[in-house]
Image (tube, rainbow, N blue to C red; front, side, top):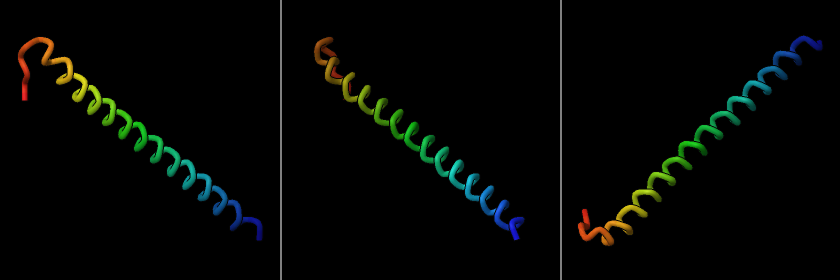
Length: 55
C-alpha cells in the first residue's frame, strides 16, 4: 500500500521543482527585458546632450 505513495510524492517533488525553475527563468527573462527597455529609454534621454537625436 505504501508503494503507490512514493512515486506520487516523487512526482509532486518533480512538479514543484519544474514549476519553481520555470517561474525563476521567466522572472529572469522579464527582468532582463525590463533592464534592456530601461537602458533604451535612458539612452535617448542622454542623446540630446550630444546634439544628434536619433528617432
